[in-house]
Image 1 (cartoon, rainbow, N blue to C red):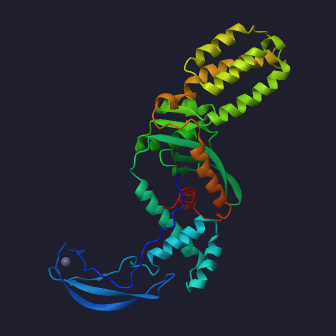
Image 2 (image 1 turned 90 degrees about the horizontal axis):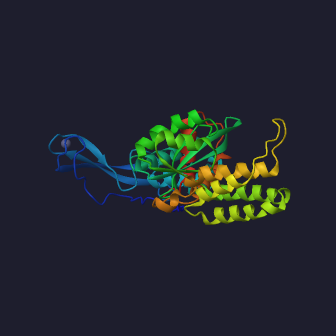
Image 3 (image 1 turned 90 degrees about the vertical axis):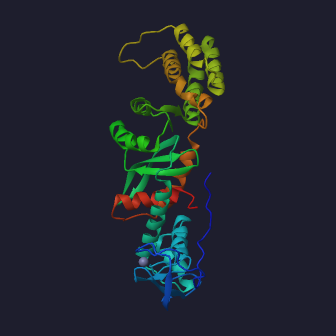
Length: 347
Ligand SMILES: [Zn+2]
């Protein structure tokens, strides 16, 4: 599980090391070429000492920064701190206010840039890391004065979000268009989703195994069985008990057993306009469960596949908490980077 690790980069006031290699010619011998005091924005120091060096091979001069400092006027520590404030729930403006007691004056746009930078760093760390088991779930976020659907993909191996798509999960073509390159690039072999029916089609087309979240299945099957228990003829009640047991235990032969039960219940052809009788509803339930059965128990034979999609839901929970204050940003890439950062632990 990702946790928020409040580890900030160190900032040194002066360099204790000499440069190793010239950035222009890879030369390894240098002459000290003066020093400058560089003012920085930081929660602890106001300025740092920077030495200039001249390369003995190519004569270029360059600055050699102390740890935690680079060309930017904010130190690496402050940039990360500002992003952490935001991830922990502050709006951009509150992050600005929270930094003021440290004597740091930032605009809210620089906080926004800081968190975009952290998101980029994270994206680079993640980029070519393969993901075996990918959790997917739709969510709604507030953006551009409206509520928009997004699709969130989570590496269920480490619980980190890997992508947020501006995609409606109820549009199977859009889901597939977005998912296909992702699945190929990451080398995904199993997806975990709730039992929205067209995920099954997408999984088949992309040739990946598909685990359906058992938490969702238990919830809707439990609800359906509870309703049927009061409506079906009493001599069929034992079927309900058996289905309940099968769903709880998920045995390998469950699919065949459900199919047998389905065959035992007589079909009563009601007229087209008439609502389904309770017994017809039970038949439908049995055949649906029997058909989907293999997707309920992928976790049983594929290593490291969870039997629920909780990992994805947790990430979405963190994103939702944050997306309340992410409003009015101009571009989808900026928004998606912010969501990814907020959904992760920001280690
Ligand atoms: Zn050089």
